[in-house]
Amino acid sequence: MHDRCRRWQSAVLRSALVNELDFDKLLDAMPDAVLVADMESRIVYANASVHALLGWAPEALIGQSLHAIQPERLHEAHDSGFGRYANTGVRSLFGMPIRLTARRFDGTECDVELNLAEITDASGGRMVLGVLRDLGERVELERHLAVLRYLRAITAAAAQLWTRLDPKLVLSTLTDVLVKDFDAALARTWMYEPESNLLRLTTSAGLSTRIKGSSRETMDVATHPSKVAAVARTRTPLIRNDLTDPAFDQDWVSREGLKSVACLPLVAGNQLLGVMVGFFREPIRDEVSETIGHLAALGAAALNDARLVGQEREARSVAEAAVTLRDRFLAVASHELRTPLTVVRGNWELLGRRLRATSSDPEAQRKQVDTSLRRLGQGIEQLRRLVEDLLDVNRLRGGAVELHRSEVDLVALIHDTVAGVTNLTGRSRIRLDLPVGPVIGWWDAGRLTQVIHNLVANALKYSPPKSTVAVSLTELDGRVAIRITDSGIGIASDQLNVIFEPFSRAPNASDQHYPGLGLGLAVSREIVGQLEGAIWAESSGEGQGSSFVVELQRGSPP
Ligand code: ADP
Image 1 (cartoon, helix red, strand yellow):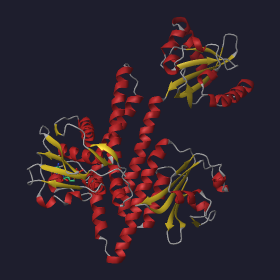
Image 2 (cartoon, rainbow, N blue to C red; image 1 turned 45 degrees about the horizontal axis):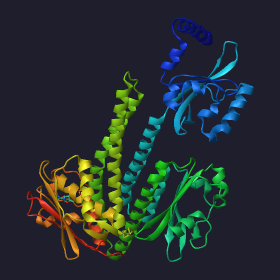
Image 3 (spheres, rainbow, N blue to C red; image 1 turned 90 degrees about the horizontal axis):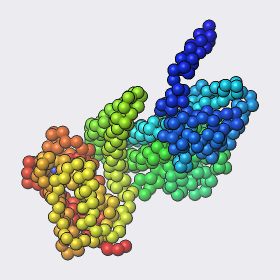
């Protein structure tokens, strides 16, 4: 009954359309690309939108094989699938959207969604009609969302890691996050025992229960042939999307359908603490490989702190220091991470609505989508910086970061850094007082930029919107001094040293709700210390403005 009704409806529709509309015009007006191919897989029709999506003039496609719009690596699969369908008439891929990569006229590739239908020509011959929709925007959005999701998981894990400063609990947090947030099928951590040079399996999650006993509990780092031991030896992460290598050829890898592995050393302060491993059922995407290193670095830092706290606990039986650090972290992180997360979340929802909405003005819609994507990007960048600062404090404190000295012109570096800060804040109220010629020394340009960026951004943040911030550079026998002065909220004398501690903020900053985590100065102090320089704050008191001074030796070529 239902079928008959549909057939009748479509007959009515067809006669109405054919009588009153030019069918070609109708197809050309569609935003999606429409192609028709015969049973030899030759294109017999292409509508106008084919040009926008694939860069082909529709006429030029007529008579070509469908290979013309497919990446070469997919040709074989297409031939066998299409051939089977042409011979048997079995339509396994019809009636559902398929995600594919298409090749454009200029050889570049694009993500598309394909819907297939069978039609018949005037003489009853079978043809295949394909509708291709551009997925570029959606794929980009999904990438952003994935990165966001992983960063969120990592920041949530950070709070947990420092709440539970116990090595075993730190490691089980890592395996939990790998399985729950990174979708690992199996996650394991190995703790390193330096006295015996052994790795000991410490926590697992995911498939662990079913494969228990299928691999050993300890391995000798020096001699064991496995990849885990190799990662421990070389301290180099391993990310592999191909597990056919004999080193992975354990029967459970194929039995469980595992496709890829990420194996990361847990290293803090140049010391190997363990190895973290995740097996996945899908190939590892860029978003995962970009962010999973952060998780390992945080895990290693927490593990290191946990060990130190453990040692301290043994010595003093109380670990007040860690507790204060933890409490400070929880207090500021829960507050500060919320702001960028709210921005990101709001724009994500907006973007979703905009992409779903049908619009009579696609150009305006595209602009709105671009704006949301940009804000999303900014929010994610802000989160990334926060996570980066968190990592930096721990890495630098642990001595895990080596500075790379090279010849640097400090005048040019200050110019560039100030331009960068001004770009970010959109404000230009900085007065420069720099020597005319270059001032050359041997420093780590990237790290020095980070220090100056922090100080200038603080001066702008903690002073009235229209006031001036002065940046000067002076030289005195073999040394240079950079001074950044503002006329802002100032610093009470008892706070001048305290503010360089991690998570420390002066009461006048937090009471007046200036945003901040209290990490920038701690990171800066570590960097300047490693450059064998000095950094300090000067202020006549609250409301009296502040100066920050960085004094550096010029250094010499290594
Ligand atoms: P954040 O700015 O994110 O709080 P920082 O480590 O950069 O973290 O600074 C630590 C604290 O030092 C700030 O919270 C603030 O109390 C104080 N501070 C830093 N720069 C200034 C400044 N230019 N004027 C007044 N106070 C400052």
